[in-house]
Image (cartoon, rainbow, N blue to C red; front, side, top):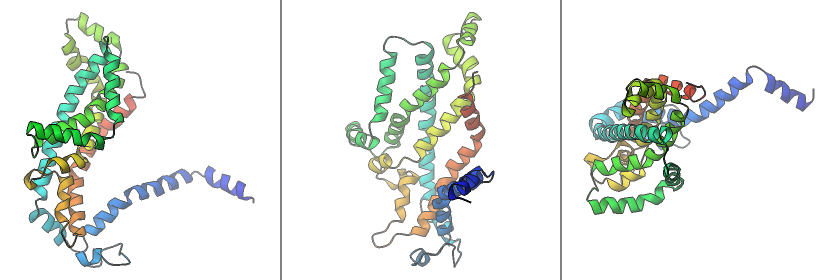
Length: 282
């Protein structure tokens, strides 16, 4: 059998897609698996060469120390406050903005959308310095408000674009019928549009929350007080002058994943519904 025929036979085999997906999935989750296994190792074992894949001296002391003797709960609380606040503001503001731009366009609408898109073409790191200077001028450094405002700036334009796409596909006849029945323009959003597009809005809310949760550079630059740092910056707590406690950092990483993973699992049905709505007419 020729190599070409053998290759075509392998490609056409029913199990091939599953094997490929399995390999890709394993590659994607391998850093997370390594982090989980390292969280249960002793510190000397994390420096062993060649490295060990599974803990030789399995210990829960790292998890206990990280939660009870390090300020990880405080870091998690700070992340939840900043991310949930920013996500709520982003979604509420974006719904009204995207609905107005989609259903009631006016002269200059395209210019506004173009400016929104332009802000996303600029690398976020390039905007950090001017944003830092503005926050310093306003006296907002070392406050949660500076981080929340930056998270809003980071995600609001893109969320408006995403929601506008969903609202563009919304049938105009339903909105006109609601107005004829006496519903106000604002009332049509809450009584007609949002109940139908709840899946799409929920999916985008999850995306906005995860973007905010993973943000590192802005909080690292704006927040210098330990009691205000989010979990992404708080992981540096385990970097010492002479040694880095990798096992404790990995344990803190597990705690950092739990809230975002929980939020994702709770909103999973909205994400699937939102994705399918994008492929179907209402």
